Image 1 (cartoon, rainbow, N blue to C red):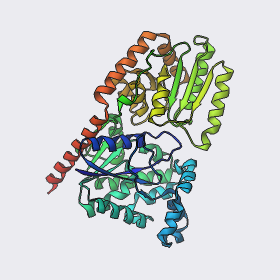
Image 2: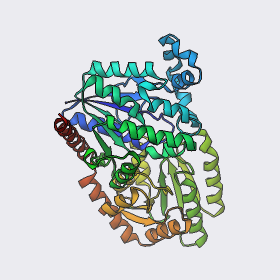
Image 3: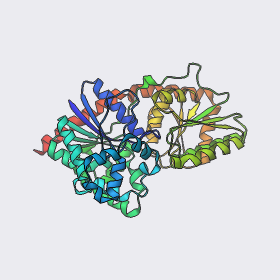
Image 4: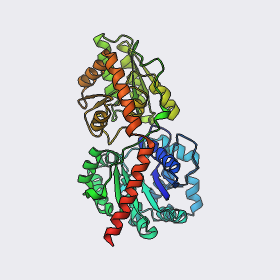
Length: 432
């Protein structure tokens, strides 16, 4: 089957779970014999493995400037290509404004309106490229791309799938009026998709309420990883001293500061002398002040905070193998938590808030402990409990690794997409 994946690129500045998922899915579908083409929107994709070059549409620099300066929409296309040259896209990816929703409500709404928005020329180019690919199905990497779906479905006449993973974090960061308008447009545009693919049961329930989705038009397809790329430390988990890790964008919203506070609490308690905390996942220039603050706070308490700046798949595997435990204590939770799978595949147990999709993932794998969201005391207590019982920590890591290998592989994710395509065809037949 020929499948076209349309995905939003995030650039190289920080670890993007959705980008890692899309890269893994492309390769897994190809291994299963499908012919897969991919297009990136906004910024180039960051692939963990060598992959064919992907065409870029709606380039971030040109998109923003044409939206702010409508006269540029009539400019020759070579000007748009110049605006989206790699050096300028690199600058855009480095800027917080390219990856954060604040101040971008009007552009977000315009994109969601698709053919009725201000990016008609860009949409024409993408649809023409897809038509040239002649796919049997089109897969959108998140529902913020729903503005594309209506024309794809009408002009190509093929099933449209759409993954659901953490779109709410972007929408909820908009101003109140923009937030309400975005959810309304998404509810209206949801009918342009055949089957939605939430990455967890919790997120499926959450988005059902937001988008008024029917259960028959949903299929939970959890993220899968290549567990063979993550191997446990040969000598086992380090405990002298113990090392706590964090793998995600290093920012306050995702709990980096909260983890630092918990580490300080553990150090001040005197039970874990020499305790280290390691961060990787990158960030934007706006996140730099937090990293400096973390270093100072942990050092004053007698510990050490380290920041690892390379976070490709091989880098992440090496990073994780140096840890005793991992925690990314996002107070609000997330739809899934791919970093949990990667940590457990390495045999490293996790401590996560009892929030969002974290709860079902930790409980399903048995690979860690849950704590109260946003509570330094609860987080420090759970981490201390894990670090104090070496046998239990090792057993959780082993149990989690077995669960990831059995239920969260890339092939399992690809099979889920195949089941979704079959459901889409069945739903189409029932409407005839």
